[in-house]
Image 1 (cartoon, rainbow over the protein chains, first blue to last red):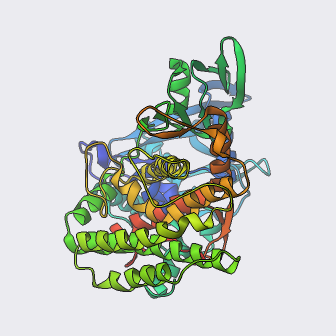
Image 2 (cartoon, chains in turn cyan, red):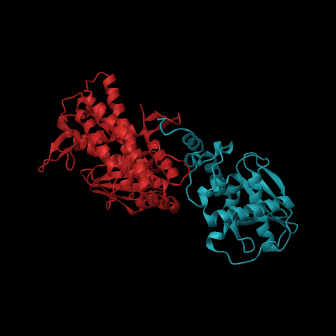
Image 3 (cartoon, rainbow over the protein chains, first blue to last red):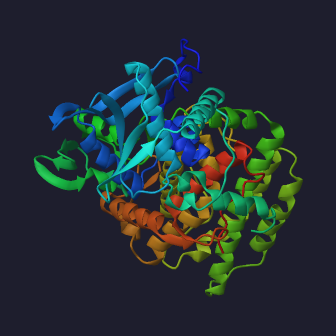
Length: 207
Length: 331
């Protein structure tokens, strides 16, 4: 899959933050608020997440058995126009792979997998080696989940990169999509999905 | 989250660890964790150290400067979001006569309806009130949809408010007299309290408007004037009866502020003495944090949250996400 995107000079606003891919895959509108409108609010979930990353993001490098662990690795891809950080990169038996820390529980979290896959794609570009898998470490269970970088996941990731780049350059606001994800979203009080629906459905005189 | 008011002349505000310390001649007047504060309001001669300014700005806490007599001077504003998109839409609407007239109408509609509801509530509670102000405010409300431009809306706002203030004095249960609105300067205690409450309200709404990324200086009903927070004054209209007038009535009727709490200055202006001002600020703050059941959304929200909601809903109207702006009207 590598080699499909052109290598070129990226403008400042075309450079896609890797973390934005996760937000976009969760909800395009959330990604808009954070990366275009620069509005942000914490809730208990995001606070737990940043606390976790504060502990993870101490740059360090050490050997653990046969494994070399490098924390907080800065990533930049000239090919895909991506920039960001990997929480942890491990090198074991000549294999390089990323590990992303998340606060919740294991599950089929497409948004987390896309973020991890993008990290792997940058690492592939930097190291010149193919990376077949990585891990997501879910802190509340203290367990790693193996993620395989299948052609489908890679294709999905490329699509999201494109979509985020379009969002950042056009600054067009994605439509609201009220759903179960709104419940846990820290930006609900800014986005106001149910309030908007109510206003649209009531008449001017219903006051 | 609360507003920290500092009224002590000569006080110094500094940061110690994650706390804000207010000192006066080596005596500690207040010691508050920064996370409990969302706004700082200074009256007159109060000093801030550079570290405390840095911390407040970093934490997104704005600082408002009022002079010793409560006149708004300006604010220290944390980094504003780069959401210039919403401001562009706001400017477009301000130059569009149709949209500006519509919004001006809605702000005034909110204000007049809330004034009317306030008088009706007082009458239900046994206050004797003549019939005319009800009719006049109602007439102004009915005529609003026909107002063709912002000037027409302002005329109706003036007529409705005049009718309301003609009988506002009837709602006072203590020995205070009130014969109508007098501003610049207020020459009686009630007008002095009203002016002070409107200043506090405009400051709070300006901060809500800022949070949303709108420009507080570009209004629709209020004409742009250098240094005036016109948009904040626009949104403040619907909140005036609900928050400001209500606080003034409650401090007077509960005897929290009495005639002796006021002094007359040489020029005829009447102002609150320091101690009473602290009590008034506490009452205003309490009102702002008090919860109501939201008339459309049916959940409980503080007035403070309602102010931000109105600013957000206005932004949604300006950005074309909803097709109307509904003022907050409570029964």
